[in-house]
Length: 337
Ligand SMILES: O=C(O)C(=O)C[C@@H](O)[C@H](O)[C@H](O)COP(=O)(O)O
Image (cartoon, rainbow, N blue to C red; front, top):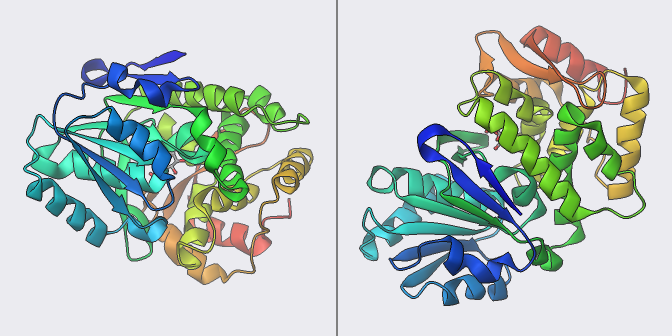
């Protein structure tokens, strides 16, 4: 299946299809120098399938995990680009999850003021969410995505077959972002999580269709795109407060969403899905520590933060909450209405 992201002068296709990783040479112009950026967690077999289709390519491998989304790795990769004499006409292909995509995309956005970027996501999280939309970034200290750019990929190639080598924890981590998409936009997507067996292909496709529709309407997050941050305000704060590597991103988003699901029945429905996915519980936290991180959220300004609330599955409310109100939400806790 092919979906198009229509964005005036930088539209691009997304291919979602099993075995499509074998067709990289059909979808990406590979007769130029290509830096393939990946991480130590991505099985070599996937990276090699891509490399074999790119005659003039080299591989840059970063350590797996969120701490790699940092200035040092960014600098190392830029130095690699220079040492391989990469020109403006050359390209970067990311083969990996959200960390690889965000970092490789930011290298592509800034090297020589921007070169072509292609994304081949290999985790559920990146296949249902982060590979589409052009948000690329690195973290600074423990602040998530604080330095970055909007740099749309030229093509996204999603092959659900590559998920076969992913751990169950990583699979469930990624599903949290798809569940988020359902909770704000489409109850049918939520119901796919309640079926006996999870149809991953259907979840990826629906999730990406919904994301594509939002990005097309508001590429630079002036307003509507903020809804994709449901669960992230407190989720990012938890991720940061626990050292960026204790909980996975999707797990933190799942925790963060609980604080802003306003309806008791819906919250129970969501908790049942979390139980099925074996997600971690919200840890005991220090309110002032989390609040400190919330004040640095990119959706914060002065004393308020744009927050997404869900009362009914498949719909959202965007509300400016004061830091005082966020403090009250944190004091109330995730499991109370
Ligand atoms: O694409 C978006 O827009 C999103 O908000 C998707 C999020 O799920 C994703 O985690 C994003 O990277 C977070 O964005 P940020 O603006 O809070 O850094």
